[in-house]
Image 1 (cartoon, helix red, strand yellow):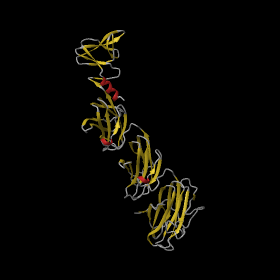
Image 2 (cartoon, helix red, strand yellow):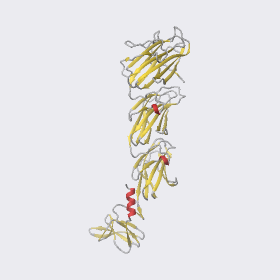
Image 3 (cartoon, one colour):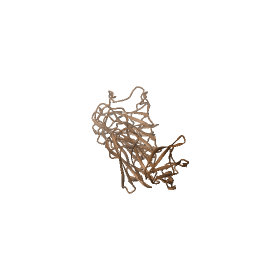
Image 4 (spheres, helix red, strand yellow):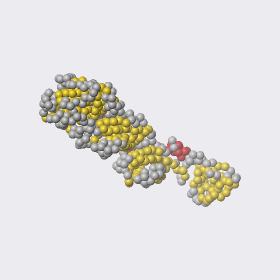
Length: 483
């Protein structure tokens, strides 16, 4: 299907009787009949314009001998870049202009309305190679007074421009990370860019706005599963903004830029960038389910981003030994999050909630977890829900009865009756506090004063306390959860 061009560009010049674009010193080419096929196309060559932004131009002047006449033009790009095609209109006929590559694949197709002006037909990003433009009468009449046209192809070299056809993963334009790329939206087709991330990290897709249409920026993985999907409304700003940020694994991704097929305005210019920052401790999308969960380790801080109120980030925790685990998370100024901990059978063990705030690390609670596999599901709870960043970490403690085992412990005391703790000062024990039956205290050795509790504190050896040596299993558990 063709798109009807109904707008006239500001550059429009008063045409001569022949509708020419030619300027002084230009290499103007007149079609050579018969040029009704690709094989017989009239070759047009590029010459310098003296302009920095559009440095090369090629011209083609032609005549439609009849309403059935078809004219082909051939041009070659020595390097990757972009073209801007301008053409004059016919006063009594609707004409069609089409762009083909050497594989006979149509890259552009436009209907040009009746008129007496010259217009911008289309822009296109292209790889180096040979291309063909086809012109013909779509409807209306032509005669000796209204059958001449003039066409101009402007060309600039650009390594960071989409290259058509790039409407599927097989033909996607490769993107260099952290480089800006330009593109032109297509009618009923997508612009697809190929992104390769070298490691786990955060991928930010940046993009510009169209003044007239909403642009859609879609990211899919190598399995063509949607990772993120954002649409930005029209805006007349020239800014390039962060559209979305996601945590990704090393691999291949595809960015698809498009707009609604019902939009009247197409061939809209846009700028986009795939900004990547390596981060081994970030969530990896897609991680909505337990089968796609991001593995996390104890005692590590992880970064996550909730993109929307329906987003769920799932983390997989493998406990190598039994430990008491505390969940710490950051706060967001305007958002409260929910974190649900489940076991391998998806049974809910505990639910944690953050509060809106500014702290970077808040303890949300703890739970005793035996050796096994667990999943933490983070989701939106209250407040803002667009692109909410957060941090989390899981801190383990190995409990030995009532006390936490710590490196250097040789054992513990358990009070069987009321007794006292003393503090060693200047070689003498002075009363510190009283403890009661059942109290437990970690011991870091013994000497002539009694059991050493640390910080110069002691419990005297007596029948009021029983001493236990640290079991090997406790030491092993501590080693496993603190790797």
